[in-house]
Image 1 (tube, rainbow, N blue to C red):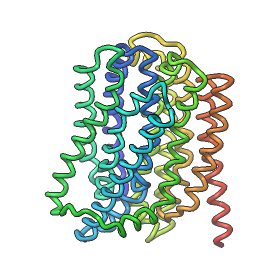
Image 2 (cartoon, rainbow, N blue to C red; image 1 turned 180 degrees about the vertical axis):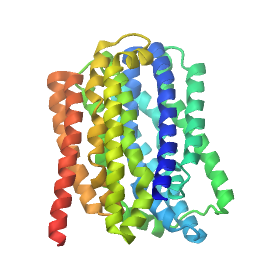
Image 3 (cartoon, one colour; image 1 turned 180 degrees about the horizontal axis):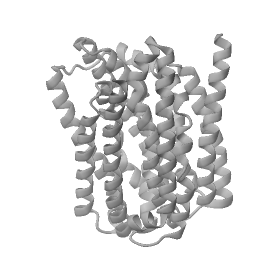
Length: 412
């Protein structure tokens, strides 16, 4: 039964990622050719900054929201309260982050070279506030999310085809990305509320405070995780010109898409792993280990394919051979495999809700990544950053493993 559920969820997530890759191939090629390397780099730089802020909007509910939804099946009143409180909490945070970013750029002069790009990207914060993945995952309706993703990404692709023509249009790229997602998410939430007979109720300040407190550690750890993933491009921007930044971002696009595969393995089994963890620890360990071996095999194969085909992947994205991007992609190709090494550790932390361990591990990893990325970018530019990102995945596995072993002995 559990194998069938994993296969179904993982298959839907892979289809979803396949859609992302296809859309990314078309969108990246269009944008890279129409905007040029420099503007393309600025677009992705602004996107990285807003994605870092957007994790504050998620506020850790992408980690434990699905588990809570799964536990409230059949209890419509509790589910209604949870969904409303998560959405309202996220909307409030989105407004706060938008105001903070505006003040930093307008009054204090931060991000001067691409402030306009950031303003138009702020809509992504509000689309993140309504991101429905936690609901779909908690109800084992990953196929629904695939449909949401198809509609949002296809709409985005159509809009950039029609409206992004020259480098002057670069400021609107991220706005179109966030706009299509926001509209699709709103439509699906309306459908969900009607189907589940949920009433929209504004949440009391007391309950909002409660949500802020309960997920604070997940929130802090999520920030650190995204710093480790997206912070590198922001650091690199201080040491290279916009052309090199754009060529690096071209390769990183594929690297980030590939890195999501270990996340999909986690998402595909989290609910069932939680049930097994409560009922049968031996079966839990056996089940997680089986999926772990599959994940290592899949991600290792992906890395080999990416290295072998790197020249043609970049050609598909850019419409020309970009040797720099090709080399960067070869370095980044095995990041998914190295990230998969941490699969067992992450599952154990999430099912047991060891928030303090997750927070400590992610921040230790993030700090080491910032140090490695800064030195690597300063001395070797994009090549140095790529190596820093690879080393960060290895460091992450060591840190998580050490903390779990230490915790096990302390609890014994």
